[in-house]
Image 1 (cartoon, rainbow, N blue to C red):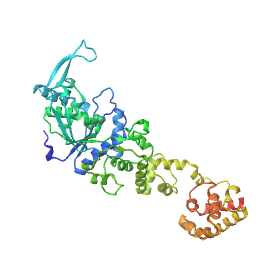
Image 2 (tube, rainbow, N blue to C red):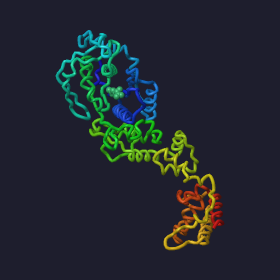
Image 3 (cartoon, protein in one colour):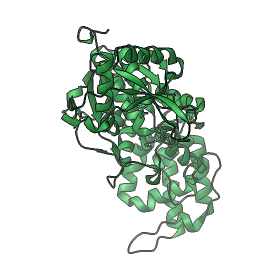
Image 4 (spheres, rainbow, N blue to C red):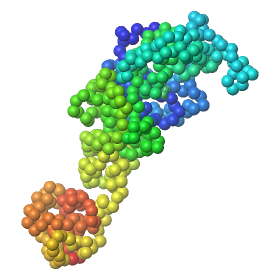
Length: 443
Ligand code: GLU
């Protein structure tokens, strides 16, 4: 048997492959991972696929792909369906030691049929465990009676398999969702019968929707894939999910996975349910996007299925919170000016300012002056800063609206677009001059 006090922590994440990876499961996985990494311990993934009808390989793949995408790599891997001999042996041992017994009873489906189930001899009384998050929890287990642990000697029930696996693989800390609290006393009874050392339990509060109910499909996205499709990146998601139920106790909000792995402490888990807040997630994701070097940002966009004009990358990079936002912006009208020169529209070019009517002639003159000011900049130095430096004093003197509006509309043909300096730099000197000349002529 394992003397785990002498070993480093060994934790496990035990997903049932009965659906795609849920965002709450991703959070529990992350907490297990962080605890293992922060202590130099071992992170085990165990696929709980004993329910043959509901377990599907495609779900297992989705869950494991999700872990990998988030960067939550495991040190050891087990699949319950490959461990039936181990459960069988453990069950036989319990029967031999008379801690469990075969009971012949009428079948549930067909009461005329006799089935042989295995029941645990329940010593009764109370079971107390000291939960890291909840504190001591005491349950009267007498009511459970001699509960069933296997439907047949080769068909163990879920609780039995969990306990045998935790015991045989030397799991020291069971960190899981608090929907498993009610299972724990039963599992402790099985564990004591088998003679395993009791792990430390930490039951994480559920992830809640803004209305404080359990986060479910009716609140919107619940699958990790949904968040991936919304353009969140692993760095943003892991940072945000870590803070759902944990707090470093400092001001620092933005952490890489590695920084989280160093900072994490099991004692800092919070008791109350954590509310999933999209605005907050977007903020955290944006910070991580900003920290990506430009070429990496481009790569993430490409992986997301978006190829952006390299001139636009810096603009997108500073503006978006998700990759999807970047994709939407690129498809939007706002950047259409890059590819095609606008049809110059005199009515739109003339600015509307307060108190007075601006004439077409006056507007043409301002454009003329802007054109002459731009002559001072060489094509290779045609940056947004350089353009601003020469145009800004003139715009301040004459009025920003009357100078900058026709300049921007002349370049883009749009009522809304990025500022004229950025746009000019994106287009380059030659194209800027051509468009502004065309605008002046149209007036
Ligand atoms: N397979 C269980 C689930 O997906 C987890 C069991 C456990 O963590 O003990 O909810």
